[in-house]
Image 1 (cartoon, rainbow, N blue to C red):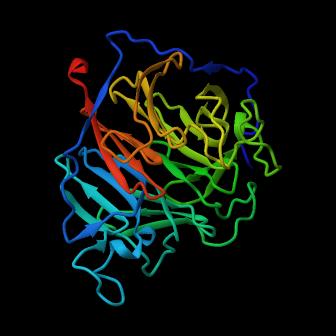
Image 2 (image 1 turned 180 degrees about the horizontal axis):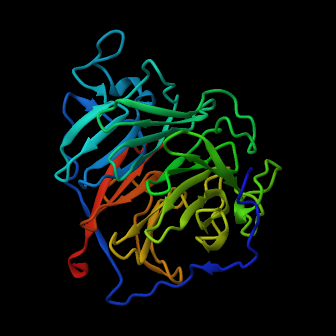
Length: 365
């Protein structure tokens, strides 16, 4: 039986219009020396996912197939230059910015996505990967060394937001080890959150915007009270107190649910952001600091900025970034993750091809 379809009609819309400057507000500065030069003449493609594990190692998913030919001269059919080689899709970095390992790609026993997207590392240090290629209907689960564990769904054309056999270009993953549940934001074609048993792969429940029944009826993007998630449903992140935060990117909003899919509240971000389909203002989030999670870090690939907002009232406490290619600027900032030391790690896609580290500013320590 599909659960989670009863919407809660208590709506808390928080408009982010003020920028308090209290001394207690967090602030961050760029660490331009992180990461270190990649080994093996590796070069990165579009970087779409970032996660931090229990050792405070940083993981990214990047797209080797997105690298232009003139940047991979060693591997072209006729060697052009002495550099470079596409890095593996999955990379692990230590705190100093050294590459620890890299792995990934098609192998026997599973279907590797045609376009890598979200990455999640759970408390057992196993790695989850989604893909948003046109026929990517699956999420993959691996041990930290790349050994395959399980596949959820399968490759193929999407079958709609009520189908339970596969996803349709899923974007992100969150895992609850105690309840043995994996939550997937689904995604670039579907309009829902879908939940599976994390050990067996059995379907458990799904829901749409406001906790309603998912639907694929056409709705216009950039509508703050839209009854449906836009495409893409771009992120899902679980707070320490057990709520699920979902990025409804094209509607400029962050919706919050309990684990059963009942709607709790929403935050509206930069509501005047418009653009091509799906290019809204809420691309990914994480919580800062990890201990108390008083603030939400929001990355916005349409405005190319990072916002730190108060979790209790949604007010903006700090902003950083602007469009550009220099350190501290962004070109399609896509994902963010926070470590136990209060550092932020942001990734860029669509030719941004970069991960940046943001450390707490001196007045914030």
